[in-house]
Length: 297
Image 1: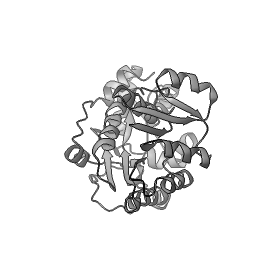
Image 2 (image 1 turned 90 degrees about the vertical axis):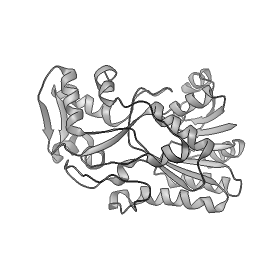
Image 3 (image 1 turned 120 degrees about the vertical axis):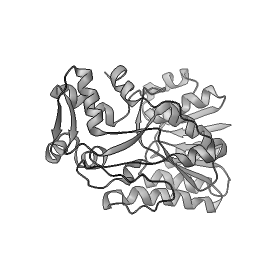
């Protein structure tokens, strides 16, 4: 089977590509930077120079593939519309990557006890309406002859197995922790995020590619941690015991409003029971604190 992956040189896309190649799949992908063509080729990827903004190129790559995994952007409606139009009526698979900050509120680091499943309706705040609407649009496209699937990763960590090795949230927190000399969190720091190792996440994409029903969505998680716990682990790595709370204004000055509110001070708790039950997904790594201790640098 030939699989076209957007974001092939990215953290998630590259790790998925590595797994699929090891499983005997043929993998193609667009790459914006010509200097990455050779390294991707060395990994066994058929890399094509171009971007997802080139509708003609995106369309031809999708037509040539048996399935498409979209990891390049979770909120770009233009590339998604090209893919949905191209694949309409073909019965081919399109897996779209979203993000679990759609579950968040402006909680200023306060904890929440609620854990979402895929059956729980989402009433996102205004900042996440577009994300949720795009997910729903992709799922509804299953009625047009496309096997559409949405995967919603939680906090992803671990060393990527493609060209890009780092995730987003933990490296940002670690960068500021090193600057401040101690682990940091925003406001109360008690908000909780589910998390998943990038290698386990790639396995979920493989399971979904092979077995997921059309029009299905899956949360990806295998553990959870509060931002205070993450800060304490980073302080321990730095050899200190104290941690530092940033006010929301301070956080916005460093990370910007979106990351501060929805990536670092909200709750994003989800259950992956559906993926385990329906797809037989068996994540094996529950080690975010081991990753902080031994791998981030």
